[in-house]
Every structure is written in structure tokens, then in C-alpha cells.
Image (cartoon, rainbow, N blue to C red; front, side):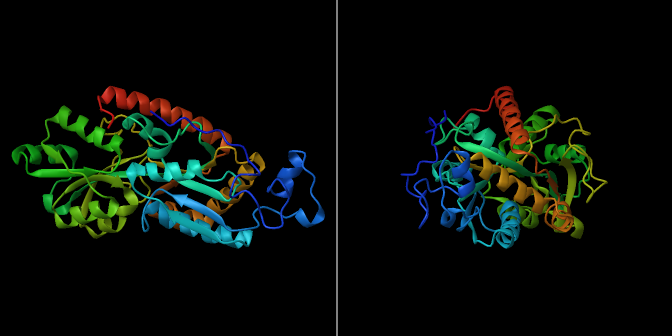
Length: 342
């Protein structure tokens, strides 16, 4: 169950919406004009004219954190205002969701949130402290984080069939980790289909999974590709499959899960949203500036493609439709799997 979303407007009396020396509305001049406010010359300041906060659901050092800090540096250059990254990890990605939903809707707080927060958790938890369909204004889907199924090189297996055979030969001794619930569901379905004998082990994040793979304590995982690029190249781990529409350009010899008979999984994406009620012209400017930086060739290559991330940067309208489609898909996936909300 989702919390009933409190439908906010850009309330001039709400804390956080006033600017020092600003007008009664506390909104940028272009928004005031659109809504019929009158603004004097001293108030005609472009947005943004003070620091912008970006809330991220992931801890420092993770894939999305590294990306958003690089993006924040570029936004800071473009805007001439500080961009502050605030990590609000934990709670199954729900802590950041609530922080974003409760933030002032004046354009000075935006958020980069994963699929768990935006579409999945409403079906995997009995209740969450926000309504993802009502509490956020979509800005743009930034990227899809390709997932990879990897094993420790010490297992000496080169395919899923070989992994299944090894696990049956050593029942109860092999374990796996999966960060996202759809990935865990996929592994459990594969086990049921093949008779593979692997034990699911919870993890605290991508770094925890990397350690488990390299030490051999948890020698199988399905997790974001960026976590393992260097380790795959070094030969420390072996990639058996990727979850993407096509093979990764970084590892073209690794098949997709679809090629191996798996259904398409719920994509692991990270999108920018703002608190509900953030004025449309601000949403449009945020989209334009974020997408312009994200699509700049050198940034796109170095910060996304080269680390196994699929750039998107769609429009707010397209992202809104995508979110609705993903909620429908998530509801079906959870129902078909028999997963019980916690």
C-alpha cells in the first residue's frame, strides 16, 4: 500500500519556497509570469539562482552516485550555482523516495531514483511511505543499468548448463546474490527449471557482492555490469549472460538472457524526478539541461557506454508513459512469481 500522496502546489507560504529578496510567490520570474504574477526588474532572475540539491537512493561510490556526481559537476558549470549530492540510501530504496516526495516543489530539489523506488516497491512491500504514481514529476529516464550473471573463475564453468550441473554435483554448497528482486525471481525460476541447487544469500550492495565473488564465499551473482567490468577483463570472474536487448558491446561473446530462454526482466533503470507540483517550465529546463549534458558525445561515452550503461535521456512525457508501463509489468511479474510482499 502506498501512502496517500499529499498533492502540493508551489505554496508561497510553505517553508523552503521563499527566496531572499524574492517576490511573494517565491518562484522564478518566468514561472511567475506564466501563472499571472507580476515581477519587478529586480525579481527577473533566471532559474536556478541558488544551490540545487540532488537526492540519490544509492550510497556513495555506487554506479548511479558516480554518474550523478559527474553530471552535477557539469550542471554546476552550466548554471553557475552549487549542485549538492545527497545520498539517502537504505530502506530498500524507500528512504530516498520519501525524502524526495516530502521535499519542497520549487525546483531546488530533484532526485535520481531507481526502478525499485519508482515502480517495483509498491508491489513488494505491504506499504511504502509515498505514492510513486502521484508524488513525483518525471524529468527523464537517465539510463538502464545492464545486469550480468557472473561466477567466480574458480568454479571453472563457462555456461549456465555447466553451472547447473556443478551445483547438482555439490548440493547445498554453492550460493548466489542478486541485488534486485526481479533478478532473484529469475534465478529462482532458473533453479526450478533446471534443478540447480544454489542458496540465495542477501547482500548489502554491489561492493558486498564483488567481495563475495572475489573471495569465493558467494561465487555466483547477478548484478550491475559496471561492478564487474574490470574483474571480467582480468579473468577473476566469468560472465555467463547479460540482461539487455542486445549483447553488450563491451563483451560481445557473452549471450543475453533472452538468448538462453529467459523472459525479458524488469529493467534496472535510474530516472530523474522532482517532487509533485514542481512547475512545468522548471521540469522542462531540467530535462533540457540534463539531456544536453548526457548526450554530449564525450560524456556519454566515458560516463555511460564505457562502463556498461545504456543511456536514455527521454522526454518527461515519454518517461511518464514508461513508468506506467513498468508498473503494469512489475505487478504482473510479482503476481506470476508468487512473491509475497514484506
